[in-house]
Image (tube, rainbow, N blue to C red):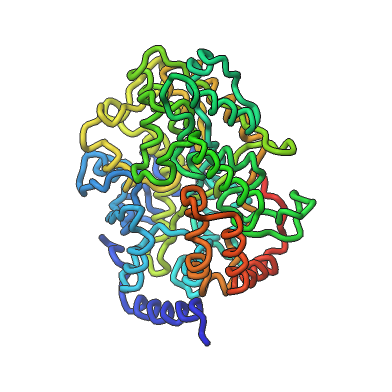
Length: 538
C-alpha cells in the first residue's frame, strides 16, 4: 500500500514537471542593528537594492510574494507605505495575502495549481508536505546565499540553521524567528487581596485557598478566569511538571534532562491530573463557568479589566492593555502578578517555551533572480533596518526624548496601519525578538513594566520545553496520526474539564484504545528516529 507521503511525492513530481514548462509566477511582475552592509552584499550607497553587474544598479528586484496575515486583511496595492518601501529598497513586490486561519489550506491549493509564487511563507521542513517538496526540488537551495549575505545568516541562530539542514547538508528554508519564551502570567487584583488579607499565593494549595476566600467574600466576582488550558492557565500546567502540547519524558523516567523515551503530553500522568484538577475548580465554583465554553477569545480579559474577576491567566504580552484598560474602569485598582507556583512534591512552575520560529519563507527553484531577493532581504536587515522597524517619522512614529516612539493604530493614517504594513514584512533578527526598550514603551507606568520584567525572568528560570525534534517524522503519524487522535482522544481530552460525565478512567481507557490502534507505533517511530532526546535549552 502506498502511504500518503509517497502519494504526495508522486503528485509533486508532476507539479514540478509542469512548473518547468512555465515561467515563475509573477517573476516579472522587534533592536535596530544599525550595522554597516558588508562589501559583498550588493547593497547600494543610497539604501537601494543594487544589482551586481554593469547596468544593473538601476534595475529593481521583482518577485511575487504570498504570505499569511495575522492582522486585518485590509491590504490594498499601491499604498503610500508600499511606494516608500519600493523606492527605498529599489524593489517591486507583487503581494498576495491570505488570513492566517485559511493559509495552510490555500497555499497548498496555489502550489497544486502550478502557480508557484517566487517567495512564499510555509511551515518549513517541520511539515512533512513541505519537506517532501524540498526533496523533490520545488524550492531553492540557499546555502550559497547565506554565505554571501551575512546579515540574513546572522539573523537566525546557528543552532536553528543546523536543525533546518537536511541529511545532505542542504538548507532551503528561511525561518521567521521569534522569542520562544512566552510566559503565561497570573494577574490578580492586589487591592482585593489586601482587603481580604490574602497573601500572594506561592503554591497551588495556597492559590486554591485564596480563590475560596474570594468566593466566600462579598465581592461577588469570579475567583479565577483564563482564556484556555494553554494560553490562559498555562502557568498552572507547568506547576504539574509537564509541557503542554509537547512531547515530554515519560512520567516514570528518572532522568528528565536526558530521557530514554519521550511521549505526547496527553500520555503524562501529570497532564491528566492537571485537567481533572481544573475540573474540580469548576465544580467548586472557583474557576469561571465559561472556561473553555465562551467563544469570544477576549472574554476572560474583559472580565478582569471590567472588575468581574479577581485572577486572570493570560499571555504576558497583554500586560500593557490590561493595566491601561483597568485603570479606565477603576482608577483605584491595583494589579499584582503572581510568581510561578509550586505544585505537589515541590515541583516548580515556570514557562513552556514555544518553537524558535513561526513559519518562514521558501524561494521557488524556478525564480529567476534569487540574488536580487537576497540583496533585498540583506538591505532590510542592514541599511533598511531602521525603516523596517520604525517606518516613516510623523506617519508611523514620533521622536520623544531622542527615542522613536511608535504611533498607535488610532493615530496613524490608513496607509500606515497594520493592514498595509504586515503584508510587506519579511524577517527580523533574533536579536530583536525580545527588546526590553520596546516592551517598556507599551507601559504607561514604569513600575508596572519593571514588575512584568522581573516576573518574566522568574518564570524563565524553570522551563518545560517540547523534547521532540519537529523535523523527525513518523510514517504512521503522517498517514493516520490526526485521525487516530480525533477518533480516540479528542473528545475526552477536550471535554475532561467541562463535561461532568468524563472521568479519569475514561481518559485512560481512551488512551489505551489509541495506543492499540496505532498510537504506540507513532511513539515508537518517533523515538527510533530521534536519537538525541536531551532537554532543549532556550
